Length: 367
Image (tube, rainbow, N blue to C red; front, side):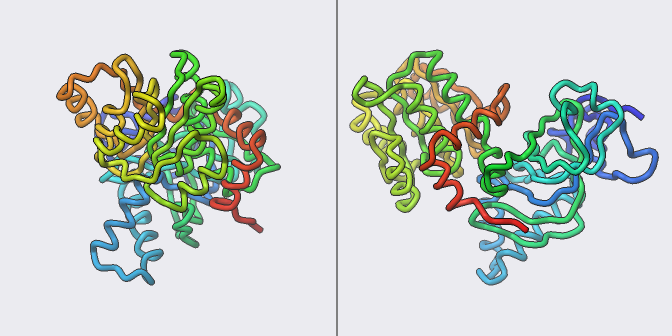
């Protein structure tokens, strides 16, 4: 049996929707009527929940009165309830999901014909998906553990990848959990590099520069604009003092500023002082809402703002820029671009200090 290449055969509601926009997906994987020749089935082992979604889940259970000691169980229940209701991990508040690590369980007979998906893939391979969990049919038996520091859940379950999906074999020379965290935001660094080089950017700022996507964006920006001695400037805004100190220690930025990214005028003042003027390219990697104007006001007219954050509001960005007569190109971060996984892994291999930071934060030996 062959399904639709975009996964519409798994959509239960509403009629006509594609999987990402669907309210519910069919996550049944047993029986002749649910085995498709152009799907890859995975044993799901770790869910990497995107930062904005995980933060919202934590805040919601704490607001409901859950004690800190019960936080892990409460977070697990929210995810289990979401997956059981929707057939996928699709946060109804943030609209975002994440991605997963798993092992190939079944490869459909027609998958080998799918460019980029079936090539070189074998049953038993350990892989990370490069498509959002909001698009991925998912069944969970249970949550084994919650690792809040990494925004990851160890699970027992199964998932499906469609013909147009993307996955990557886990690199054998990198810690699995660390690699998963980096691959979750694999689109950030390559896209920043492409944008900066295409526009000849000399000044780049990164909001939320201390997080995983922010650190990778800073590394890509530094390589693109060149060294400070040649006039390139990379500035980061980070709200957390510890993350700011870790980023500063990498030596990627000309300035790392500890400041609340939601303070639009404060961000503008500090970025302009550190960068020597408004920036050509602004990258927003912040996992909280209401930072759109901070990004816009610190960017020069004719410059570009790249929103690589699931907390971004298109309405606030568009109407906010209009309200202050700001002529900036605004780009919504696309988690996919050709070769993004390979480029991100290469960045970790090329920069030992960056790799060490990811290992310390997100890595964990697995049996």
